[in-house]
Length: 176
Length: 216
Image (tube, rainbow over all chains, first blue to last red):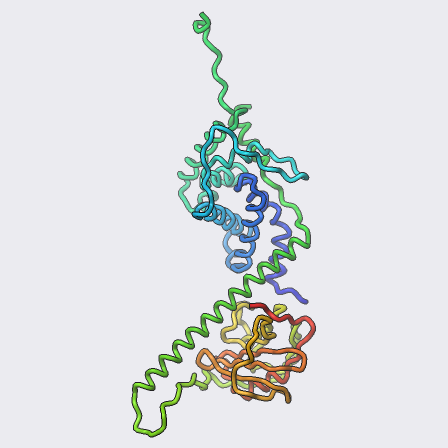
């Protein structure tokens, strides 16, 4: 069977980009590998259905990233999806694939962030996007990206005990 | 290193570098995507038929309300058989697509391409894609989900049974047996083909081993 041009291009895109998309999805979902796989599969289907559009504006990889992030945020908006609740303790740590060492504590800590805040942190500091590009993906202003990212990082430092601010040494006068 | 530097460094290390995906995973993704495209095309086609049916009912009611002095009972309005344009079938000698071999095409038309489920014949320069059947001649196997007998007027296609009907105000749908398959040919009304031309085209179609029947 001779493949259609779209099929051949799609296959090449999947072959080159799927693993990174899945990695991004895994971080976005705070280590939920099953949800990450679902999100990636849905993203790739939407890519295929809109292949002409997907490959025009800014390239297929950028389009896929945008679809993935929006799919993640939309998924978290569904009423059937349980919301995160802030706790004093780290949630259960995600199991990591055996072949890759993963910062499980950090992944779990990301789960304490609200979806859009988490997406902002992931886009800026995991995928290393500029503020402008992250704003485009999220469909918000650059100022919102900056504030969400700053608050997200601050929250992560609160949640991760090893990153908690070290209290200053007591002053001599306090020893008395 | 400050706490913040440590945190951003750890975040950066969460990124997965691009690497190859196994062929089997790629194949499954493609099949999943094709299935979604096929379902979407079927939904659009079904929706179109629904609109045509509603329109036909409306036309019928208008005709009925106009009254008649004739003793003849009012007849059901038929979709207009008048094509948007006249067409001629010409011999096709170009490269064939997998699934279906054709010997004739409407003049000015080319093989747009094929999926395992359908062959599209479109005007040269048509880039609407294989999921779009409008303004095209499409050949496919009848869906394996169909359990009802074909609808339409009985016709003979190469001496075998066929059934021809119109929808969408003149779009032809010919369902016929070729001895081994139940084949469906759909000719959009804008092509201007007559019933005889649709049958003539179908008589030149050969289904090959690559053709697959859709589901749903």
